Image (cartoon, rainbow, N blue to C red; front, top):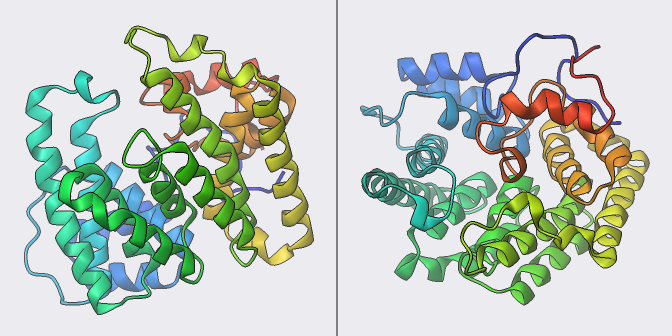
Length: 331
């Protein structure tokens, strides 16, 4: 299976949504060295840029007051992306009615700041797909008047060069019935992404992620709020299993045929997380194991949180064992 970053035995999992450049990026972030942080990001693929910003947002101190920063697209993108991640850290995992009241104010405050910073970035650099990705997430959380921005921004993102996989996933989620759309719109967007063959093969893992989002919608709309996600029967349906397995095969075929695509490790990481999780839910343990093993000691939080809760790390060794892998990560 297509590898990721460094592989080797380690006693503990990496920090949430780890990126190989995280330590260096946090050093620049904490010191306010915007030029060095911007240069670091500029040398990464769009997928890797997105992932590093996500990692900074999940592993930095919450709500740090940022002083003066340069009037550049990168600076506005960095700040807006981190504020989006801070917002969701404040909110926490769970349904809206499960979120403590005191969490909502910092959630919305951060999203408003993020929205404005990302809008500024997009105005300065209209082709900035990373900024568009986080902008969609901010508008999704804010809802109401902001939600009108989602569909045109999702279409725009699809037209840009090398859109981040996570950004396309944000768009798909925003267009789902769980947020501001419906199943027809969500699946229509996934189909449009699939047709864009110039996008990395990891785009095919959105087919699997769409099944996870559909499953969540089926569970969350139940009147019984105690319904356990782990006992839902959505993934036992033959047509659902078939779609996930076919998406996995298409991804593998395209990756083998397109050697250059194997260089974008952040895009591949997205595919391993989403295909691995969907295959696991569908009971396809052997196929899932290849992705889970490739993730090694740094799985993403999403979509695994729907199986294991947050953080994922404490349950990761047991999940590895369940699909036939050793609990211990080996080279």
